[in-house]
Figure 1 (cartoon, rainbow, N blue to C red):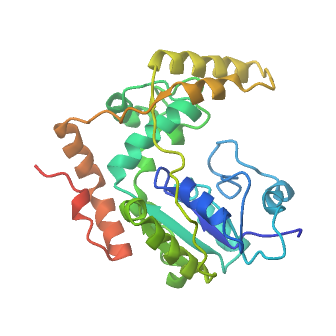
Figure 2 (cartoon, rainbow, N blue to C red):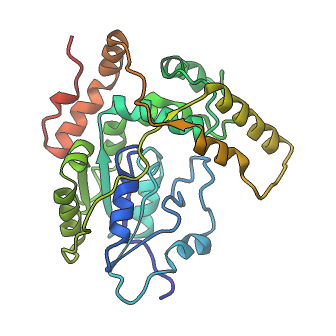
Length: 296
């Protein structure tokens, strides 16, 4: 089958289980999911190596067959982007949107690990990176290898309530499906079946639900800094190689140890910062999210 066009989009947020959901849906006989998972075609305001050619983008779905009923992709920065949802809506006004939400504090800390591996972040201490946000908004303290400073503004990235607010007024409610990360993690099968119902597909469920793209902590901050600086030099001097050594180093420079426990005073500060967003999310999904709050 050729010229398949996506009909639904998992638009984020990052570190909310989108990779796992993408893989589960790709096993459904009526669904074609994009390859790669995150083309980022519609987030034209963010520089993260997204596909910009339309034919190349549609080629991400060329492996679909006659059984295909629903076509999807999972670019997790679409929610963060100021233009992606509008671009998708202009592309196909009948598009369906799956929005996965999580405690913003957890998103911010987990995404910091992503930025260290992918987006050129060099500050390995999350608290220090968090406190650099105002400087970075002003164009200061930007790591040399960072391709877009928007990708290292962890407070902005995790303000998912305000991100949802941007499009909730013009996307029909029946075309938006919310998933809370905690529910997806603890009741995966149940939440997966709800997605199939939202997409109006046959209730065919995988035998098991393995976890994909688990948050993993950087093992050596020094190795990360050196690798990101080498990537910067490669980019600066337009050096092209086939080996993608930096990605391979980042892939092995991780540990299964949990992320650092943040001190209470810092958690309280973040809780206050995200209070408005948590209230918005609670309102949009009609669910009590008080368990996300940090108690004095």
